[in-house]
Amino acid sequence: MSITHKNKDVRNSGTEKLKWSLVQEEMRNKLGEDIYESWLKKIIFVEEFHNYLLLSVPTRFIRDWITSRYLDQILHSIKNFKKEIVRIEFKIEEQVKNKETNINLIEDKKNVSFIKDSFLQYNRIDPNKRFENFITGSSNKLAFEASIKVSEKSSNYNPLYIYGGVGMGKTHLLNSIGYELKKNEKVMFISAERFMYQFVKSIKANEMVKFKEYFRNTDVLLIDDIQFMNGKEAMQEEFFHTFNALLDRGSQIILSADRAPNKLSRIQERIKSRFSGGLVVDIQKPDYELRKKLVEKKIEEINKFYPDQIKISKDIQDFISTEITTSIRELVGAINRTVSFSRIYNKMPNLAETKVILKDLLNIAENKVTIDLIQTLVCKFFKISKNEMLSSRRSRYLVRPRQTAIYLTKILTSKSLPEIGREFSNRDHTTIIHSVKTIEKLKEKDTEMVDNINKLKNQILYNNKDNEI
Image 1 (cartoon, rainbow, N blue to C red):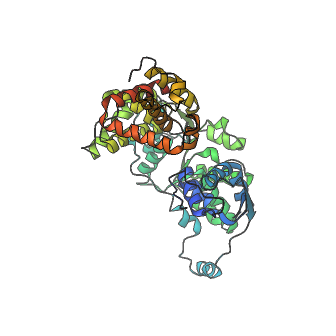
Image 2: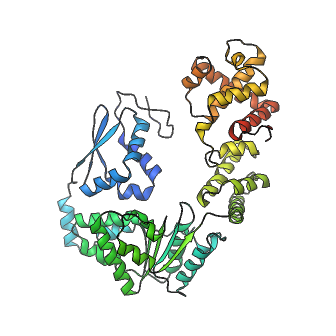
Image 3: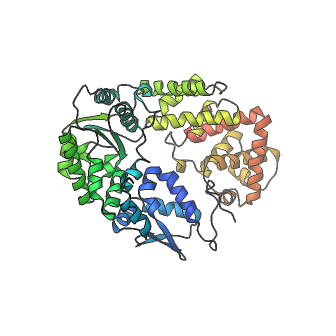
């Protein structure tokens, strides 16, 4: 049986060996490039046993860091490909170094150290994240103005500490500052995860002198997600001295986090005190006016690059602006999903379809959509009893509602075909497939069927008793 990474329903059988490369790919996609390169890439597959894996990492510190922060996500990724695996064991196995390469590095002083070589891969300022395309509103205006002043060197906010929830634009602001200052200054933009990785690797390679020189000789230091710089005392000690050395040197420090300095956990009090000693600004959840501006701006950009793109209606824009309130990132994601729908189906989604497309972003808990609820509402809609729907009778007035309920169960829940079959009087999974395909074909030519499906979706997801779309 072949394994397709993108299709989570496909699993290894118990006799097949787990392909570690697929697990690595999923971890990279799920946890991000930075975390993967800093920590998870160091995991080496050793051996697979009946219900657990043996993996190796180069140091005890990396093992402890991975197990305390990422073990659940790693195990979940593994179980996506082989559900029999229920635990992971690590062993410490230092990687063998190439002696010849080390000798060459010592002899050739022109070679950059691994710190600089490795860091250059990650110190990339994104030219697409600038002040010019940062949309402001009452929730982020203070952070935006402070960032502008720092980039213009018109105010001495040192450090500038920006905090807010996930997807609120903190990284965009740090990137914008770096983009402006790199024209005349030596700028270093790094995540807290990457800083810690460089620290650990420097200790292993006996290159702490180079580490200090590299991080203490920059004009501007931007560190993203500082809340992850917790735990290990030796690393915090080095960061504290690096921080002080940069302040003494007159360098500008800008930090971002998901919480205020006094709320940081497992970080030394003296470090939190230094953070609080500059300007601390927060980014609140975007209000309606900001969300509306963001939606309009994003759609304007899409129309500019894809002039033949199907337009998203004003009603849908207003709906997204009103309902997606958590973060800017989710707002952009909602627009992208809606646009993708219109491109795939070559039509503008109506409101009911938009609600289905965005159901997870609208905080509609999947566990509230049960098969029993779907069956009850479909029976009520078509004015039949549940006993009639679940019976073996094949009368036309019963078959269509039954197929409709099966179709809605398939698209609105994560139940497997056999599970759906059991809930419909133990029908075979081939019957379930036939029902789904039948409704999909009818929708292509029967407008009344499309209208009924949309009304039922609206009822099931939003408890809309008026059957309005």
